[in-house]
Image 1 (cartoon, rainbow, N blue to C red):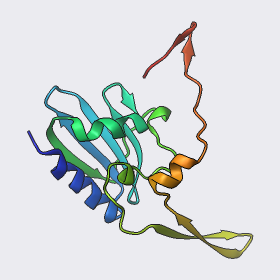
Image 2: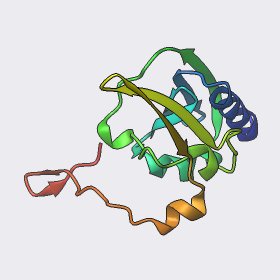
Image 3: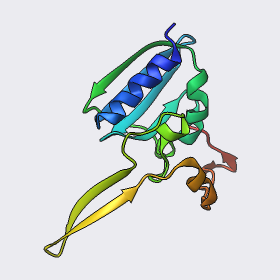
Length: 145
């Protein structure tokens, strides 16, 4: 069994290095955890029956057997696995991201526009109103995938 702090530190190091790929974790009770990282930002999480933001609460408490990172590999996950763009998963885990601002440049009608995006902290994100998607239904029952 591997300490969760070691694995979470490795995940934070990959995010700080702006890596892209899939972080795989295998637990002692034979469950799989997949974490998609795109240019240093955690975009999707899947662990057992949990998807998306629910995995963040479970991640510090799972018993890890093995872990690995496959660079430039995107694991196909369901749409419920993806977290909102404004959510900073590292901040939710208590691992602070080095830079709090991302500067991006885009071209619109031949003019270069520079945008600065600030990654919100938990306090700012909790004040915002979140819109929850309705549950997926099949024959009158909620589908959990």
